[in-house]
Image (cartoon, rainbow, N blue to C red; front, side):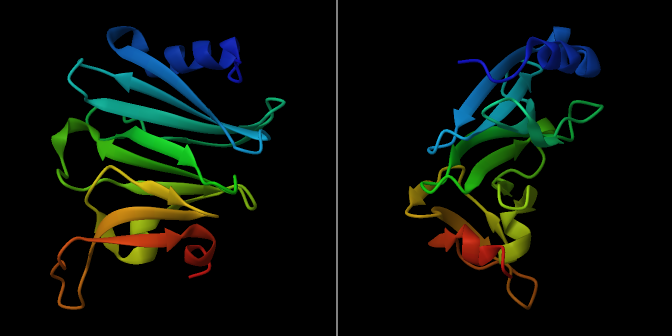
Length: 172
C-alpha cells in the first residue's frame, strides 16, 4: 500500500538533488491503521552516511506534520535507523545517527505525539543521551532505552536501561 504520493517523491528528489545517493522509503502504519509515518532516507556514499526526512499523514494522505533532518552539506544531518509506533498508536518513536561521523555513541531519539502533532527529542526531556540504537516497546506507550544521564556536575552517569512512558514524559 503506497501512502506517499509520487509527486512528493519527485519533489524530494529535486529538492535534495538525490541522484548521487541511494534512497529508501519506509512506511509505518500505526497499529490502529489511522496514521502513516513515512521515513525517506538517503545514503550518500554507500557507507551508512545517511540523512532522513519524516512525514506524518492520515491514512487518507493528508499531511499532518513533517521534519527534515537533511543538511545542505550532507554531513551535519541525521539518518533514522530504527522506528516504530507505540503499542497504543499514540506516538511514533525513532532513533537516528548523525551523518558525517560526529557524535559517535550518541543516538538522537525523537517521538511524534499525534494528539498535538508535536515532535519531541527524548534527550532534552530526560537530560541525558541515548547510547544504544535499539529500543523495545512496552504497553501502552512505553519504550525501553539505554541512556546516560547528565549529572549536576556536568559529567555523565553510567549508561542504564530504563522504561520511559511517553505520555508521562511529554508532561514534563
